[in-house]
Length: 338
Image 1 (cartoon, helix red, strand yellow):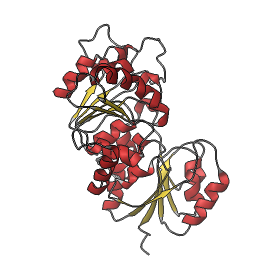
Image 2 (cartoon, helix red, strand yellow):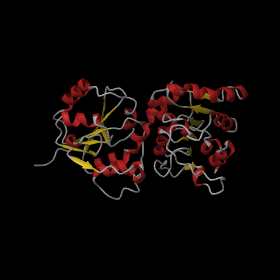
Image 3 (cartoon, one colour):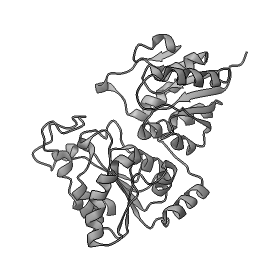
Image 4 (cartoon, one colour):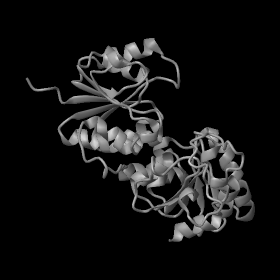
């Protein structure tokens, strides 16, 4: 009896992680699996930019909490449709829907006492030995040769054109700044540095981020517009994710921290400068030949050396955040024109 080629993928809850799962989608689709992705609403548009995904089901869940009744109801809707499920997050609750939907083959990593919920379990490597996240997700395919996997996103041209029209933007006529990093301040390049850089560019700047990052983006836009009126457009919290993806796909260049939008830009293959602080480009690099990565940790000329990096902390435990403060706007500008 042939196995059912219809597979359910339980998506991560962060945009950057979702982007890094694209090579897994490509591998599964290439061997004949028809993919339905179950994703939270703020991640779902990323999967609509993956041609390998046949269907996206938006899960009506909130951050945190088990939400047992809602998960049971969703499992009942999905029951009988799939022969396999791939559970990408490591949480217990993420494995509940495939189990409750009685999907016969359920693949994921060990985590949160969910042994009975999965039928195929991969060992979760220690954080210090974890491979780059793209390979971490691709390993769920059971295949080898993962080191060359590179995420790719593809927006429909009509969607990009409509988004640009709605935002009043011209293809290639602006630079995107993504100054946020929801993880914490130890991943955010200073707002004053972003503002100084914006005033040196030859195209206007579009600031993208969530509503939580609107004040941060305004901290950048205000001094820029005081010096050059209308040069900085603060769209943080004012776009849909589809519009933000379109703006990134059509930008001349993007400057960002290690964030979800950095991975989006890499997957679209646009010129970019990615600034790393408390995290490491060895673990979550922008996999893009047009990316310039700035990380003082591996700069032999930078003194004294950053022995504290990468600390992977939300806030600098030493209080100086040298890893980001000492990356000057002039250095980023040089990387942009390199």
